[in-house]
Image 1 (cartoon, helix red, strand yellow):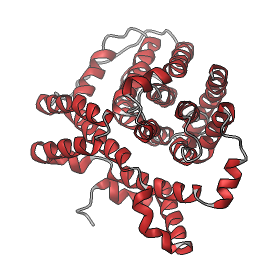
Image 2: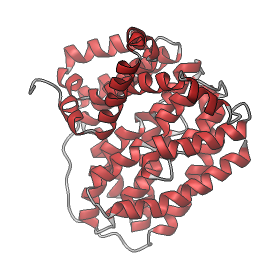
Image 3: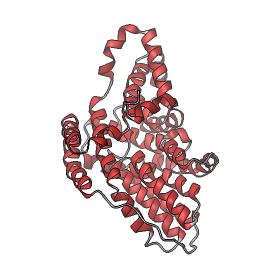
Image 4: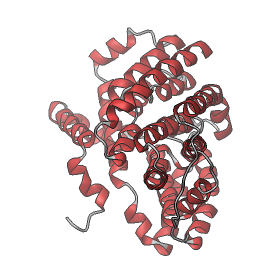
Length: 367
């Protein structure tokens, strides 16, 4: 099994994947006649778009360019407050372009290093970066998996999606920066000498050259062809990038589609969800936001998409639902896992739960 990518071998310890797999096995035993139809339950354009983005963002990460840029930024900040604002803002912006989980994989290790050098509170800063990826990623269709799914599901234009999400995302980002400024002192930042590895310019140039064409193809509904091109380039140019992406995440999403669409087809579930009055935007919004707290926002988006075509309200709901409890978004779990501090769960909820309440109410008022 050592020939398998690390992300696939790690699935043995992934609780979410194991739960999804057990649910799929239960469906297979209960209704074996539906198993041949499982491939049709998967939204393959979404999987293709996610795979292509994982390849491109892994290449950007592996190039070392973001590490160099991060050190350049922190070297030019004078106070802890400014350093926190720079790191949180950078995390939010990256999540708009490189997806929320990739932004955390890039920024959290850099932040931990900076905190050791400058003696800043690492736990609080990483918690704010988790909030930042939830706030920033909601703006674009490629910022997080639930947006990517909704974008591909309804064929919304890239610009139209951004325009629809701008009011809620703008308020969430403004609120985040205000709270960040209040949460970190304006003490002088004492940064000791530190260095960073050089960037792989060739890899960065290839990734940058492929990024926009891939987005254009995905926007036109041809994500599969874009993936073929990107995959072909990296198989020839940097094969290690193909093996390094999170294949386990893709497999997890395939299982999500199978499980949740199988669940949505059950008469009992249809009756319950149908009784919630999801044709009313406020009902859909509240249901999506609170469902995200229980099953995470990506499964909530997939499940509720079977009952409503109001993609904008659903997108607002599941993105607002990324705040709150740690299960609201997989990005929250990623941030806390990278931090490695068990006490951070208390700190996370102390900031995230009030943020969920405020952003959730603002979204409801804006509807």
